[in-house]
Image 1 (cartoon, rainbow, N blue to C red):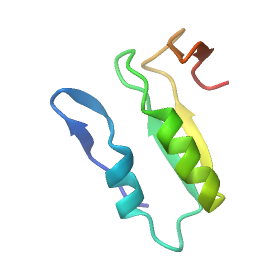
Image 2 (cartoon, rainbow, N blue to C red):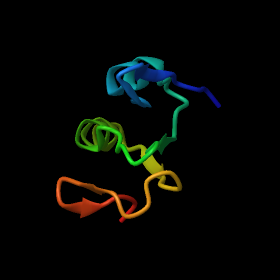
Image 3 (spheres, rainbow, N blue to C red):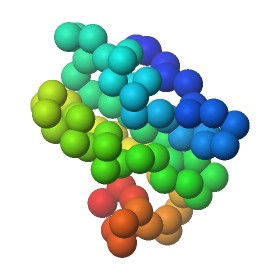
Image 4 (spheres, rainbow, N blue to C red):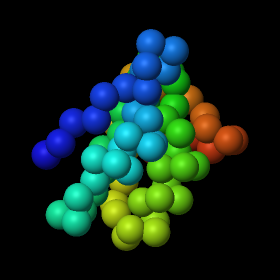
Length: 75
């Protein structure tokens, strides 16, 4: 397991570019945390993960009822 830091003080979710840089050939899945009601950049993350065939697990505990691009997180 590898942990990826947040994008910065302005964004407490994962930075998709850092996530991609940290992945290795052994990477099989990603766990992203939507924190304090703010969603991760799922558009970028899902596109990148889809090209690599990676599963995505979304932790939505801190973002109940939060929508991203008109869709509830985690669905």
